[in-house]
Length: 330
Image (tube, rainbow, N blue to C red):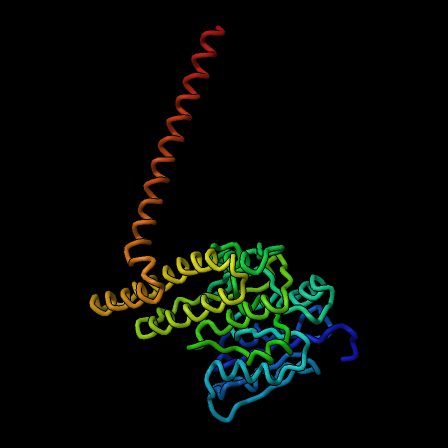
């Protein structure tokens, strides 16, 4: 690798995906049009043929590690960070994908600088078969740090690992991916590096996040999601100027309350669900009660129905006026 452009590390932490998406993910990483890339695969003691699949790819771009025992997902993430030699670092889950020009587009957008905290593109959501569910361009370009945070809360941008390049040195300095319960560890790293070292935003969609219908149960973890959410929100407030704190806290409290109520709504036991609702209500300063969002959605539906009726009535009135005018002209 004698290219003078910054080296980019694409790290793929994997477990038991040899018969699944691993080959496709490896192809998307190795076949980047940007020439100065290294690819790390960190096998978390998979019992399948992961090693065989990885070693079917060859070349100086690829390094393979296999753990003697499973060290857990987040430890595997941070192992990848420790091994990275690149100026920038992408953590690519073993079921996500990046476009072949993902790295090239990111580095061109940053003018090949190596001092940017994070570089981000838009993200498409795909299903288990790879069909596109939705595309989310990154509309955070030009936003201040506070408005970037609020943009996530309001859907202007989305925060996914597969569409984010991290400054490797800065990521190592903050201890890699860490949060209270390692549920928002990636976002914690993103907001810190963005606030402290700046970011480059690419509007175009250049990465794919895969959504699975696995029926995951969150009931035993909602309290941990609450704690991680509050930890992240408090961190965000610490990273913005004092005059921006109220707006970030207001939008963040609404966002995280809704998110955690949605998780709690999946709990089967009515008593456990109500207890969890109270935990969420208390965690976010008693700001949004459990029924707030259902009332908000219902009121929004009513407003839309009324607006639709008014629109239809106006259209009929305008049509009648046109006909009357035409009749008079005759």
